[in-house]
Length: 118
Image 1 (spheres, rainbow, N blue to C red):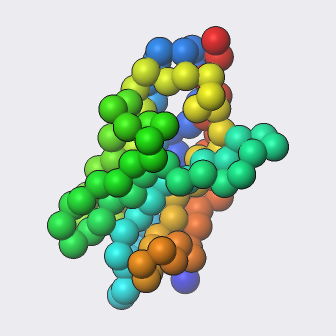
Image 2 (image 1 turned 30 degrees about the horizontal axis):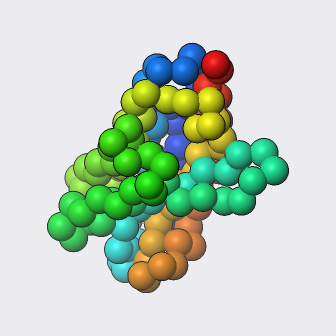
Image 3 (image 1 turned 90 degrees about the vertical axis):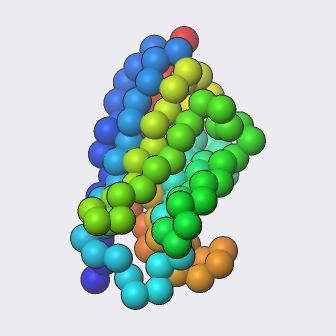
């Protein structure tokens, strides 16, 4: 069974940077992309960014464009989320997930907490 492990979260001040890592124990046969999502207290689950394995295309939520960068390492089955210029509203638990069919993220990690103080 594929396992995803996120790391790199923490407590930082506004304007700081963090780099999240998501390592997959293996890549499923049908794996379209790996993505990052987040959920803040009392808010809905929110898409953050995705990295498509086949061509390296990147996708971002409008709220993080220009501040966050997603990248992937095919050899390591790992994706990274570089988060710059962090804002208090970025505070959330960040989850990575594997998309095995378009729009279908069905393998999830346990999440890593990111807290940005003002």
